[in-house]
Length: 183
Image (cartoon, rainbow, N blue to C red; front, side, top):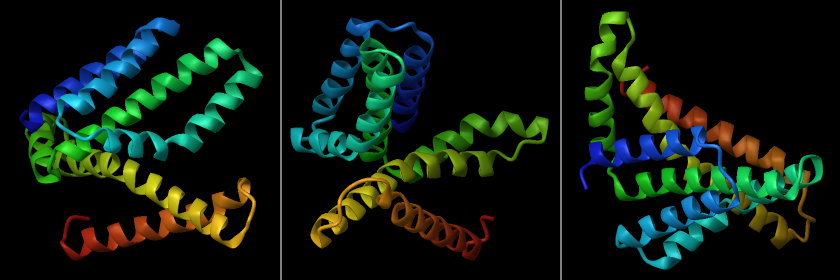
C-alpha cells in the first residue's frame, strides 16, 4: 500500500478511535483489527508480539492507575485504545520508509504555506514523532534489561536512565538535523 494511503488509514482510525465513545466490545474489536492489520501486512506474529511487549509498562501503569482511580471497565477501554493507537503507529513506521512518509506529509502540508506555516518543519516533526515511539520503547526495554542484569528491582528507578537516554538521543537527532541544515 502506498505511504499516502497508509497515512490516511492511520489518521482515520486514530480519529475514529479518539472520537468514538468506546465500550468494552468496540475497543476489543479495534485492538483485534490492529492485530489483523499486522498479519495483513505480511509481518510475522513475532513482530506483533515484540511491539506489544514494548508497550507493557505503559499498559501496566496506565491500566493500574485507571483501575485504582476509575474502574476496571475504564481501565480496559482507555488502555486498549492507547495500545491500539500505538501499535498502529508502530505498524505504520515498520511498513513505510521514512522518506516516503516525509514526502507524503510534505505534499499534504504544502497548502499551509499560505498561512505562514513551514510545511517542511511540520512534516519533519510528525515523521520524527512517529519514529521515536519504537525508539523510546526500545530504550525502556534496554533499561529494564540492565536493571534485571544488575539485580535492581523494577520500579521508578528506571525513569531516570530512560529519560537520560531519551534526552541524549534527542540531542543526537538535533545535532544530526543541524548538521544537515534542517534546523
